[in-house]
Image 1 (spheres, rainbow, N blue to C red):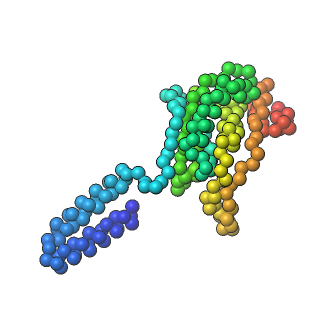
Image 2: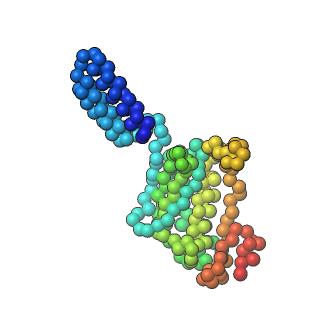
Image 3: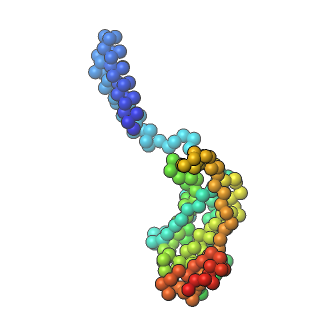
Length: 214
């Protein structure tokens, strides 16, 4: 913004100076240049970035309170994969996939809204998952919320076959290039339903850790 204003000021001064020394009314040139600059500034903010990837949103989670999470994706993940993920997500409930994370409770009728977010200055290329209804993440729905994220992880891994994106990350201490982030094996949450209302941690990611919970 500062560079744009400075460049505009230099342009206005330069054209005004040339008009004055050419025998033309400098005020008319200055007024025209300022007007054109302001109009260009307004229009450039309203027009989409040419050549940039659009944000894509599908599904409707409704107006109820809900939650959400994000997953990084490769450049190969496009609208077709997004629609496939949405279709698979809506079948998670009917398929009974949530049963092992619900401690015998009835599972909510989830609605999902998925957004493909293009890579930006401060974010990787990712999928933003919004869902309703809201889950009690720190309480009785803790394992179900982790299970929901895990099921999206596994489903996404089956759909997104592109290589990890190299965003040019470097080690801040050494300056060494780190290369693309490669995700490790997915971990399924294990519910200790007997500790669910104890006020203690009751979700683990290995059988050994689950048996150690007290």
